[in-house]
Amino acid sequence: MNNYEIVTMFTESEIKFLQEMYDKMHGEFHEKYMNLYSVTLKVIRDDSIPADCESGWRKIEAKLDTTANDLSYRHYFLRYGEGSKVSMHDDASPTTIITMVDKDPMLDGGRNIVIDQNTGECLEFGFDVSETVIYHNHTYHGMSYIDHGHRLVLISWYGQPRDDSNFK
Ligand SMILES: [Fe+2]
Image 1: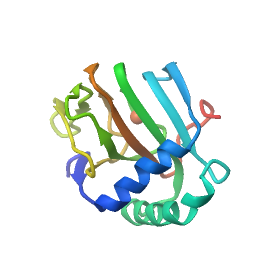
Image 2: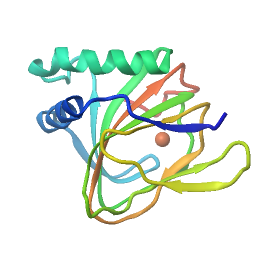
Image 3: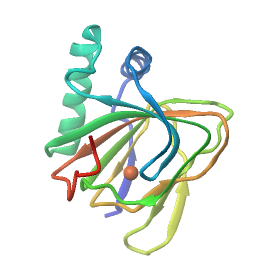
Image 4: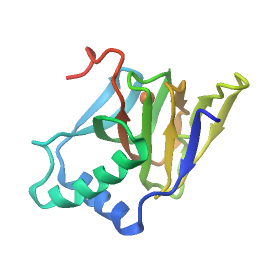
C-alpha cells in the first residue's frame, strides 16, 4: 500500500460551503509557521466556527471522521500565496487529510512532494479543487515554492499525535 492516495469525497456544493466558511472566519498571516512559509492560518475550533456554518461543518467533519476511521485531532484552513512553500516534514498525527478548496487556475508551483515509503523515491504531484489527498502513517511531505497564484486547503489531522507541544 502506498503511503498516500488521492480520493474525491466531497461534492461541489460541500467545497463551495468550505470556501464560504473560510471567507467568514478570522485568521492570521504568518511569514513562517513551523514548516510553513507565507501562509494564512485559520484554525477550526468549536468557538471559531461561524454560527451559520455549524451544521454544514458537522456534515463535512462526519465525512472526514468516517474516512479516517480514527479520532479527530485538529482541522484548519491554510491559504498559500506567492512565495509560499512547505519544507519537508512529517506531521505529529499519523494521518493527514488535505482537501483542495480553492486553487488559482494559473497556479505555478505549490505541488505536493512526498517520499514514497516503498521505494524511498521523492515524488511530486498536483491535485485539483474537490480532490482530497490522504497521507498515511506519518508520510514525509512538503510543498514546492509558489511562483504565482494561490491555493486554499482544508487540513485534518487524525489519530493520537506524537507531541502536540508546538500547537496552541
Ligand atoms: Fe504537514
